[in-house]
Length: 343
Image (cartoon, rainbow, N blue to C red; front, side):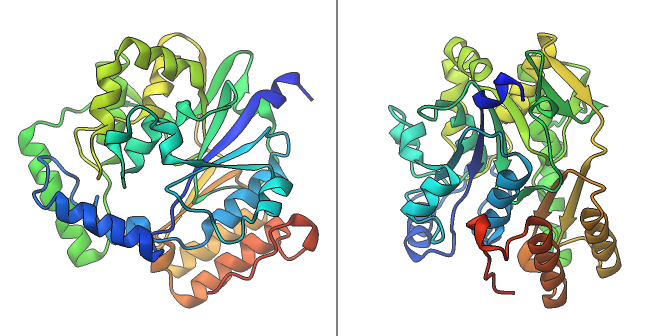
């Protein structure tokens, strides 16, 4: 095993929006900011963004099983601790609970925040973070064994994605997208996050004007030094991005900024995203879900993202739970994460 494996951490962002205290804090913040900011994302305040569907157990279990070389798992939360992560389990699973106050030290004016893009901007400030880390959303899973050099290789980050032309988002296009996002959410139940615009803004900050490297929802390898150096030189960019308590289309992503900064410095290896799969409760139909679950069970993919879990039908949820539990051996006592998830 390469020595560099001891220098790689996992970082997961998580919150339990079902928690009454957190819900009250969010509602109080909404009342204080009753007047919406210009260019605020239509779905940025949607309560489904804050629902905890129990995916975190799968995420942590997949890291422990398929990336046991991870030095430490940092779980970034808002003054919350998942019920299953007792002090004993945190020690057993090598999980470090990181509060928002830890990463926004000296920037407490940005708290509370309910904006993942704001939180991601400050992840590199986690105390004791390894020089290299892999960023996971709590709905990301590893589904096959992975080696460290599938994320960091010869001093470079390994990125998955495809080049796409940069298309400008002028005022009219932004207004059309805002209306369209509202319409598809209201009539079709589909949430649009303006994810491509987020990546484009991030690429432009790194100096790209014609094309950007479009990345899917996969675990993202990041070198903390890359973001630290950038924000040391551009403190206003950091402050400007963390001021939004809810998602805004004026924001960029530190994740995709880091990607493009590495590409610009020729410190990235670019791979196609052919080892990734998304399962979406808002858009996938039963036959497609079953096909995807079979591919996961057969070991045909390495990375899975599950979105809109609360939108799946009960039978679909049961199938997903069954597939993940079997894959991750979560019914075995030695995992420390034996699961009793409700369907």
